[in-house]
Structure formats: C-alpha cells, structure tokens
Amino acid sequence: MARKHTLTRALRAAFPYTIPILTGFIFLGIAFGYYMNTAGFGAVYPIVISATVFAGSMEFVTVSLLLSAFDPVRVLILTLMINARHLFYGLSMLDKYRAAGRKQYALIYGMCDETFSINCTVDIPPVVDKGWFMLFVTILNYLYWLFGTAVGAVLGSLVVINTEGLSFVLTALFVVIFLEQWLKEKAHHSALLGLGATLLCLLLFGKENFILPAMLIILACLTAFKKPLEKAGERI
Amino acid sequence: MTMTMLQQIITVCMVILGTIATRFLPFLLFPSKKPTPKYVQYLGKMLPSAALGLLVIYSFKDVSILSGAHGIPELIATAAVVLLHLWKRQMLLSIAGGTVLYMLLLQFVF
Image (cartoon, rainbow over all chains, first blue to last red; front, side):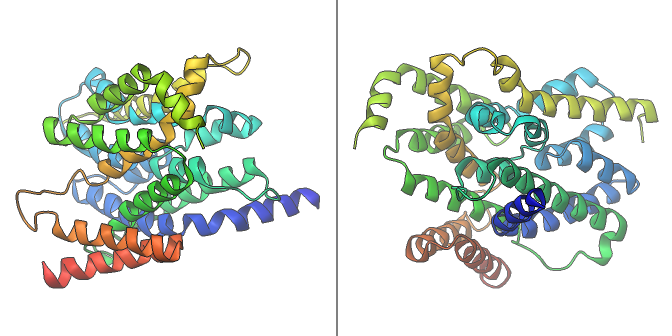
C-alpha cells in the first residue's frame, strides 16, 4: 500500500508538468507518423522508430536517411552529431539520475530535450519521491510521442487539421523553463553563454551545423573562466 | 524504395545506437564507483543553464529572418510568453497564452 501511495503521489505531481508536452508531442507525433507514411512507409515504420529511437528531430531525419543510399557509417556519424547535445544533458544529470538507482537506465534512455528540461530544473516537493517523479515525466512524455506517432501513422490525413503554429508550444516550454532557471540562479554567465554562443554559431554556420561548434565554445569558455565563474556562483 | 529490408533495419539500428550512445556516454565515462573529477562536477553545475540556453536557440533554428514573416510572429509570441510568465509565474498559462497568440498571428495576421 505504501508503495502504491508513493507512486500515485509522484504521478500526480509529475503530470501537470507534462501537459505542454502532451499537446506538443501528440501534435508533432501525428505530424511525424503522417509524414513518414506519405513518404511511402507502412504504419509499422514510424511506430517502431518512435518506440526505439525516441528523439523527435532525429526521427524526421531518419526518414530521409532511409530514402537515400545505404551507408550505415554515415548514418551513425550523422546521428552522433545531431544528438551531441545529449552529452550536455548527461553531464548535467549525472548525480540526479544516479540517485534514482535502477530507474536511471530508463531515465537515461528516455532523456529527450523536453524530459531533460523538466527533470533538470523542477523543484520536486520533499514529500514526493524524486526517482518516481522523474520516471513518470519520462514515461508520460514517451507515451505521448508514441501515441501521436501511431495516430498519425494509422489515421494520417483524417486527423491532419489546421494546427499551423501549434508546435510553438515546445518553444514556449523551453523559454519558460529557461526563464525559471534564470530567476532561480545567482549568476547568469552560463545561461548567457548558452544563448550567445548558440545564436552566434547558428548565424555563422547555419541550421545544419551549429550545434557542435556551439557546444565546443560553451565548453571552452566554461573551462577558460572556471575560477571567476566558480567565484561568481558562490557570491550572494 | 532502394534499400532492402535488412539494410533498412541496419540503418534504423545505427540511429538507435547513435542516440543511445549520446545519452549514456557521460554516465559510462564517469561511473558512480569512482569519485567524479572536480572538473566534471563543475561542468555538471554550470552546464544546465547553458544547455537550456542552447535548447532555446535550437527551437528557433527553423525561423527565417530574411524571408517570410522575418521572425516577427516568433518574436511577439516569445515576448508574450516571457511577460506572461514574469507577471503570473504560471507555467501552463505562459505556454498556452504564447502558443495561442502565435497560432492566431500565423493564421490571421502574417
């Protein structure tokens, strides 16, 4: 009974945080399922890919990879490059996810942008089990995406209505989470570095190639200014 | 379809492998049995804010400033999200408000 109580409480605490993702993922999932379907693949393809890859933007890329010439090495390298940002997420979540014990494997496997942004920043109330809270955020987001994909893949054009602009819900989510973090932290150097370096690289290298150089600049700056940054974080 | 079934399966497996690798690598490199190096601890503390900043820009990557609506609807809707959030500090309200405004702008104004 006590365990059941812990689970219910964690689920209840986690669900509200996932509502924006519920909206965004079902919509984008439908778009992905439909897109892959119209590209000539049966409904099984997008559903299996969503269930196994579980990385939104990469899945759209996978469709075009499947339509080009067979080149597994290029596919692997491309995937590593597109998903390199996960490395930053992992480094940020080392302690938090480890503390969840055996649940950490599911947490790491399902660590997409949206799940990371919530689990990284949310203040979980002390009465709620942290491990279960983070696991429910992960599972719920996973299910939303899978459900959306299945609906889009099976029903396709029947459910595609005028939702132009709805995907902004995920942008708004990231903006709000960034803002929350901003209001919580003492020093803003790292946040500004993340915005500035990434924007600079986007303008310089274009939208296909900006992530890696941005990550390198962020790492280089954090390393070069380690001493003053650590001091700034301790102040106040 | 140019690929055989087997080639398709291998291709998808490569995507899975690459994605899993990027998610698990930090945890494999710094196992819990050994104390995490001070430098990595420092990165773990500093990176969240930078990663969230990166993510914000990443989610705007498809906005074209030079063509179409020049990113004006995105700018207005983002400003609305920020102002709503500073005003009410209600996550869902800020997100819903900004998104509805963005959809209205896109469908009726731009």
